[in-house]
Image (tube, rainbow, N blue to C red; front, side):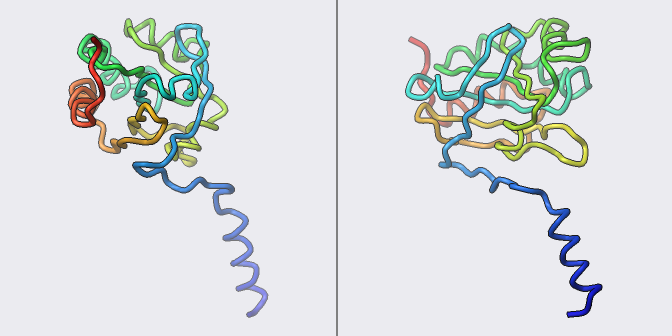
Length: 179
């Protein structure tokens, strides 16, 4: 192999994403996370294991059009989602604090659920949603079963009907209803 080919191979290997997690699939253990939320609390996935299902709706950026539409859908239809034994969150790589943070976004949209901030991008990378080129999370929703495994992944989230779609998916997954 000539020097140019060797250098090209080295360059490709050096610029490949480091420690890129394998894509999550249904049945895989959901990566644990410990993230601050817009309600001032810190949530950890492990604390829900064995107790209730979790929905983690990743979104690209606070205060953008699609994310605002999705947030409004979840806020408007929160009562329907809460009929299930589920904790649900929107999550992004935005910070919690600041004028463009998730706390300000949640307040502006009157969100009645916590929005998680992952400014270190560790959780977003673990879930495979982090877009390295754009620096944001992809709009994917993860349904995590009570046992901590990935029950479903929606990679085609429609912001305007996200709540209705979430309710339908929770029903299809046979997530228990509140008594």
